[in-house]
Each structure stands twice: as structure tokens, then as C-alpha cells.
Length: 218
Ligand SMILES: C[S@@+](CC[C@H](N)C(=O)[O-])C[C@H]1O[C@@H](n2cnc3c(N)ncnc32)[C@H](O)[C@@H]1O
Image 1 (cartoon, rainbow, N blue to C red):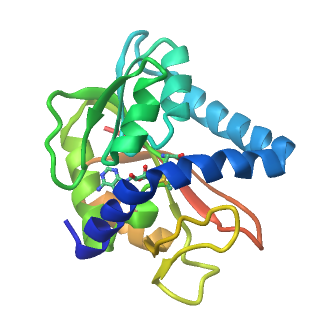
Image 2 (cartoon, helix red, strand yellow):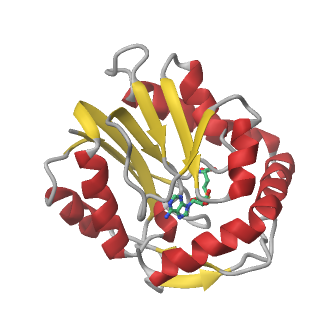
């Protein structure tokens, strides 16, 4: 586990309550944009997991408020939501989701899954972390299992990584580590596993972060 991720996990442990409050605030600032973003993600999840059997087991890494896990469950899958921060785990549990405390760089998966989902979490991983996690996810998926994840594209950034606390509605009161990935770099990491890239696209605009979105199949 990198020092960078370890320190960021500590920040979430202390500040997850602030994060939960500001996320709600952010969605209120532009409800129609938030709705479009949510719908786009839900379409991606539905389409990408459509090959999985009904009642398939899906694991989410770094669930945050648990909203995406709740949506995945509504599709008929048996979901395990997880995070490292206790305040997130409480928020997820309140929604009636099966929840475990899980650090993807420290803990072992207890069983194999048909689907694994990891949204907006690779932002906090070094290249070595990413390498380790993608192989670990591969090893813990059933055959034909699907892994959906995204990472911020390095392309429009002038730096590879930074420690940042935002002054806007994403303010948390402490710096988190953000790492930006080139597509080629992630493609190379994926090529070291036996994953096939089932789907890939980029999203986000000029002023916003650009995201690399991968759907991998075992
Ligand atoms: C930007 S938030 C995204 C939360 C949620 N996935 C979403 O899209 O709303 C990043 C999340 O990654 C989690 N995280 C960071 N490092 C982690 C690690 N090593 N293992 C598991 N979760 C981690 C944090 O606790 C936090 O919930």
C-alpha cells in the first residue's frame, strides 16, 4: 500500500462526515446536471453488467455514500458494499446494504464475485497501487466476470499528481492525494493481466476533469 493512499485513507476516516454533507450540497447546486450524470452512470452499470446472471454477486470497492451500490442492488444483484471510513460504512448500512470494512490494498476478498465496481477511487492510487489492484480484482472475479472502474485522465493536466483540498463544494478540510493516469499507462497495466477490455470511453469536458472509463472482462 502506498504512503499516499494510506494518508488519504486517514483523511477519509477523519472527514467522511464532511464529505457526505458536501456531496449532497454539490448535487443541490445543479440538480439537472447531477441527475444527468447519475443517469449516465446507471446506464453504464446496467449495460456492462447485463451479461451477468440474475442474482450474481457484485462487490463495490470504496462505496462512499452507497448510492451506486443501492442502484446495483435494484438491478437484482447480490451486492456487497465496502469502504475504509467508518462514517461511510454507517451511511451505507443505513440503506440496508450488505456492508464490510475493506481496504483493497490491505484486505483479501473473502470470496469470488461476478462483478466488481470501483468508481472515482483510482484517483487516490499510485501507479503501483493500480497495478496491484487490477491484478487482485482479476484474481477474485469468476470466469466472465466484469470489472468497471474509472480514473482521471492525465492528458489535460500539467502535473502527474497532487495533494489537494478543493475550495469549492468539494472542500473537506484536508488534502487528499490525486493521481492522474494516461490511457496508455492503464492499457499497459491491464495488458499485464488476462483481462479483455470490453468497453472503454472518455467523459468530462474541457473545464472539468476528463475521465477514462473501463469495462474489463475476465
Ligand atoms: C471520491 S470518493 C468516491 C466514493 C464513491 N465511489 C462515489 O463515487 O461516490 C473515494 C472513495 O475511495 C475510498 N478509498 C480510498 N482508498 C481506498 C482503499 N485503499 N480501499 C478502499 N477504499 C478506498 C474512500 O474511502 C472514498 O469512499
